[in-house]
Amino acid sequence: MLRTVTSPVYKGTTAVEARQTYVNEGGGYHSETVQHRTQAVGQDRYYGQAIYLPPTWQFHNQNVTFQQWSPEDPEGPWELMFVQNDEIRIGGSGGFSATLGKITNLRGTWIRIVTRLKFHATDGAFEVWINGQKTWSRTGVTVLPKTSQTIRWSSGIYCTGWREGTPSGQSVLSIYHDHARIASSYALAEPANW
Image 1: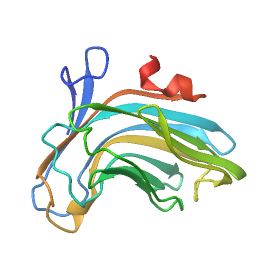
Image 2 (image 1 turned 120 degrees about the vertical axis):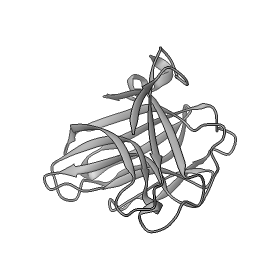
Image 3 (image 1 turned 180 degrees about the vertical axis):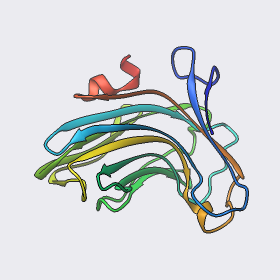
């Protein structure tokens, strides 16, 4: 379920709540907003947003994705950013996997995340900032979507562990999203700056 809420908000008057409820049936548990054709091979883009985990969020060992980048035509997940235990991580079929940072004491606060993707066969870049600090960087490497010349950006909640099993944490989960922007620089994408 996606809905507009007036609390919590990062700045302004509204945010988006992405919520999933476990109902013990197969299939994907996800609610998402999607921006198509956000980037093509040869482009350099910065994806910024603020996310909020409620103070009651229970850390657990199942992946709960809150944003992903997917090739288009043909489509499919490529790189995912997710909460697992008390960490923000990335992983997927794009070949990048890392722990980006601890969020042990950040429940009940807005967490600002900016991700840079520069698509290039030899001089690509994949970088992440959390709350204004660069926490991970790979530059001068191959960064390309595997099956397409363009990608889409999806943001929401994906309880991937529920496809195969029962929740390790709560059976109702919400992640709140605010100040999403795609830009040509870090400064323009950073939610604190606008």
